[in-house]
Length: 376
Image 1 (cartoon, helix red, strand yellow):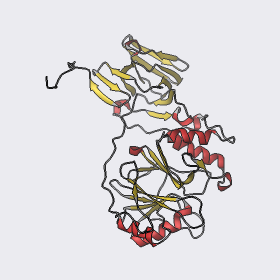
Image 2: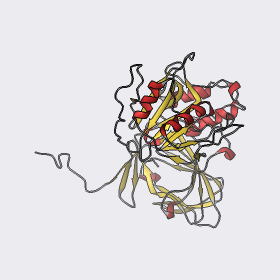
Image 3: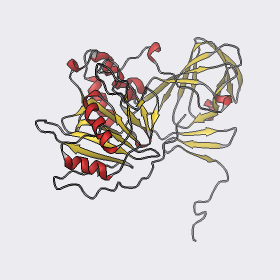
Image 4: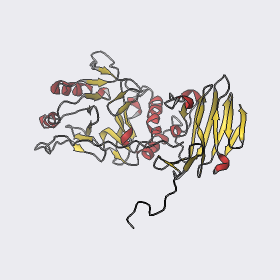
């Protein structure tokens, strides 16, 4: 079932007058409401990047300054709702800038003697402003990449480096306590299928980010990132109407699948997964991993049980819904062909169609003439 794309937000440009004589400026990116400051510190080969993310709360992520000119730029934008520190490397300077601006600091858990304590400690899965927080295992504690879903972007702090231009790479393995765990954490970001990667050091990637992350991860020899175990899956809490509540775990995107889509669904007693529907282009397969369920089709209702493979060809003949009429949870693996994104999904009980490419949902009637509403 296709998801409706997030609608891009529009924001005011920050009140920055073009920067100082030294050329410092908070520049707009191609992403709505996201601005960037690049600083090259003495003796460093790569730029360091800070980001201002506008939304209901304005976030200033990993602020940096190589001199007073950069501080002037940050002051000109005013006090952010939060200064977000994504890694320990930028913590001291970011806290210093927070004091200068009179701003609150949010970061991952502080560790080690003398670690600076934030006003808000961020944990995996929490939201701050437009961003959702992710954690990194196997590295320095407190690293927290951010996912900005409406911009299809991730802000990675220093876990990824933009070097050479147009590529991303992980920090060298000696920077992690467990490079393999760190790579698997980055795989969680890959599964989000971002278009853009905003790195703390080096050149950011605007467009084609998912493919570049795949190249980075699939070049590793210490871990096969195209494999995942059942006990590693992340189950999402249901956010559907009560009748259709089910727990879902994405599989395909988590391990780099592109032409096939597959997920696991845990269907509690009394619940239905999706209304009755059929696809024009995407053929589907269900495999019952555990339990029993009722398969609802225009041909009637049929009990399905553990071990059953169930094909749903394209067209009305493949119309289906699955519900759990029993008293035990049922677990289903769902596989579909989603290679081109041109599918149209039909819902016969409600007379709707869903256009997968845009996420637009329409009634099938009334049938309009080609020139309906035009000046003829």
